[in-house]
Length: 384
Image 1 (cartoon, rainbow, N blue to C red):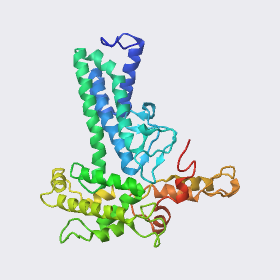
Image 2: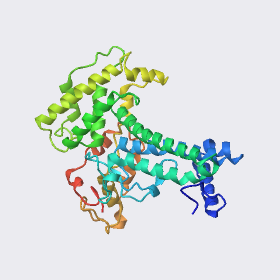
Image 3: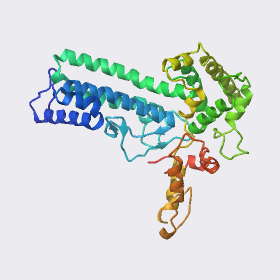
Image 4: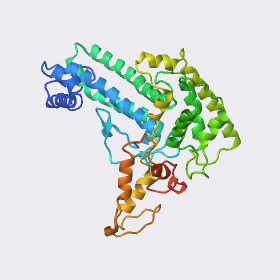
């Protein structure tokens, strides 16, 4: 092999030359302007390798934080399903989460380590594997093994913090705060427990919370922030009798849980209002960015209204496919000559603008929690 635990890798072997070629190819393919063009002419593979690892850290950590932000579970996030630049390739089973659970996954074999909120840990583990794979090149071109090991240890320690920070930045933004405003962290911690015990729909909850900020502005010229926390909670819960499936909760809230949410909304709201005052953390951090973003806009672009839920996809391909393919959720029988692809086209159009309000028809049909039967149907709620 090319590795020896007590010395640098042997750079004369064919295996090492192939590894060098892979590093250069990855730099050329994924980060040409940053990691290939500046270093290839001088054959500075040491700098190229470090550049590759730095940009991969940003890409992979941003990807997994983005998954959690929009409610997506990859489900089988091994290193072989993780691309260098922060993309994933796999045939599944993956999918968007309906009812929140921190260990949600579509695949029954995912295990806790690939569960929804553990995807950050899985991404970090994959990144450590990438670092280990590139280290022979860095070791061979460093002044000493001590120098190479110091680089590796410091990079991995920093990377763990980056993965954690990216996740918290996404969650702070979903709550309306500046991504660097740590006042939101305890608010998220309290909310996570409530979401878990209340059977909340991940997407519906966050978008309804965005609606609360829209209807009860936090700041702005002439705005006197409302303290009608009960009205805010009513708006969050909505009314299934007015629009079926519009409540973000899969079971009615009992009085104890409702009281907990009322207390949480007041705490969240008061912190958000304070943070966007002239001396508040989110307002000051926004000014430092040289681009002020209002809390409503932060939330609207952090919390999609529409996602491709599995029950939607099942209905779409059941209608579009020959009668040999049927779903227990939608037991329709059609001939291939009668295949209807209109819903496939509807969903394609819908998902082009997932953060927009959409048309009245799109709102009625697709902005809703999953039907109860879809939460238990094999091949829709879970896959083996």
